[in-house]
Amino acid sequence: MEEELEKLRQKCLNCTKCSLSKTRTNVVFSDGIPNNKLVLVGEAPGFYEDKSGVPFVGKAGQLLDKIFASVGFSRQKDVYIMNTIKCRPPNNRDPLPIEKEACREYMEAQLEILKPKIILICGNVALKSLLDVPYGITKARGKWFNGPYGSKMMPIYHPSYLLRNDSREVGSPKWQMWQDIKEIKKVYESL
Ligand code: URA
Image (cartoon, rainbow, N blue to C red; front, top):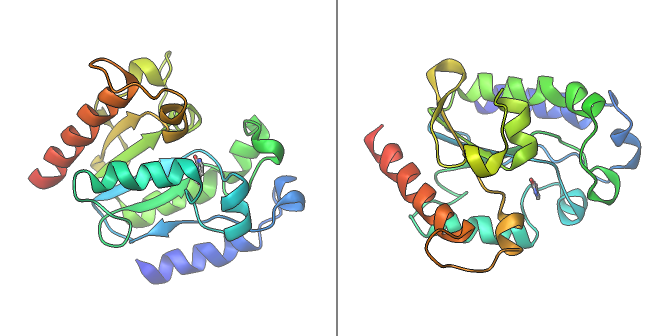
């Protein structure tokens, strides 16, 4: 698994399939532990990810780590983290369809190598890339969907959305995320 991922990473580091390759500082391939149980697919690298080459290291990433830690998960031992798009779109704009198409082969190849039992779809960009549903993340979150290789996929809110919605009241996005991560942990433990 590690060897195959490394081969793919090398290919991705040299990718010039779309124009994001001209403006990137680093390709952001993955972080965390390669494993066949739990993978999170985010959207695209931001400023800090582009600088460091590591996904989810900015404020949203720190919140994501806290959410994982609340149920005992960590990048060091349980979760493989990757993005739909491997290079930062300038000024963090949404990736264009042509960029998503160009990058799709890397995301699909990562998932094929890992064959994870649980795929967390983090935010709307990942949702649109991985699931064909006629609604957005607010409606899709917290539900299990059948994914590739017999996996279960759950869309969850992007942590940057939670940073903009600070309430923890019952029914708030943060409260919903707490329900979702507990459900994910429960299913993870049953695998
Ligand atoms: N947001 C994402 O979706 N991915 C990152 O790597 C950073 C922020």
